[in-house]
Image (cartoon, rainbow, N blue to C red; front, side, top):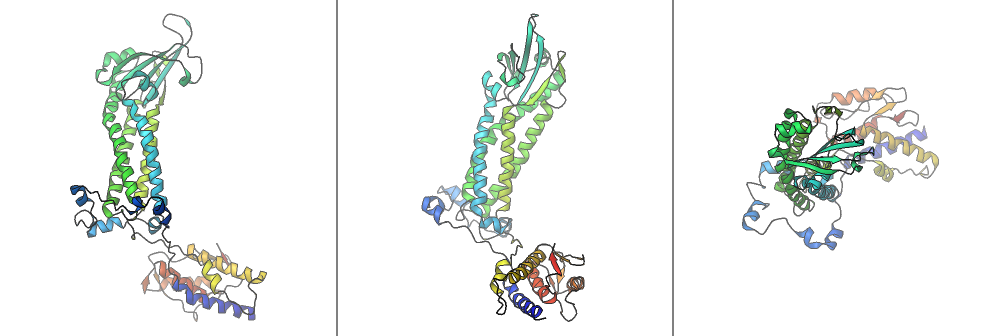
Length: 427
């Protein structure tokens, strides 16, 4: 009985103090190290000194930055991402740098050089025969490399190796897409309808390949601006979110259309020989650019402007319980004291993150986010009757649930429920 009273007195002291910690606050990263390394960069406000651009990027611009609509947009995101801005935007910055290098390689498919097209093709097809046109024995193969400017054919006289990338192939013919017609398609062994569809996709991606590479420079500049709390504004977030979202959708559409036009529906046999198709290096490169763009876009949306964003309800009471657990009669360092305190902390933490299970197997489900909260009356709630306590809490009409409300509920739950070692276990 004495042990129970000691535990109950501790529970009541913890319950009184719990509402003082309604939310878990993430402190912003220290910026002193970066400022010492490059003070000019971190102190730059991101406003160009050019007259027109200085007006556009001015944080006090009533049209593009300082109004209720832009304030609402700038607040989209999580406070945690704001606090860890350098980590999140640093990742966006890193993947953008890699994407620029990869996109430059992929844009080489616009070259008129046949060998360059061979190594930077968007699509490749090959078919092999064991005798050549002259009747000579030995595996001979023909490769088709699809660039964005040229339709090239390569002849591989010694196709002994299983890996087609290791064949010694020589350029046999090359035709610009604008000159490719039915005669060229039939000479290559492909139906004109399929080649015409692939031609339309290749020509349509010529501008997109160039614009994607160029716009990555602006995306890099946006990451450099938003990584600095001093330079990030509502308008900078808008420039980071909307263009990247449009870029992701347009690049995905371009890659999907090229795949459908130049891979799906192509004949399985060409001139009686089995044809093999696979994506080219440039296509794979732009696929990596798409992945980087999606990641960068998500990071822009998740990171609000400094000082704004949605607070995440994440409460950790382990440190708080350690501070308020004072028992003069029982040594905290004893195994029994640590055991009881650990079980109490785990039970409370489990309640804050999802619920408890009574020793009899009854599941206690926390109140939903939209449900009202009411303080629990200990005169009505038995110490072991957790289900009844949960029902009383759900019936209250006073206030809507929030992070603070959940903390208050945890306090009242502490005063209403016995934390006997064999009664409450976290799920």
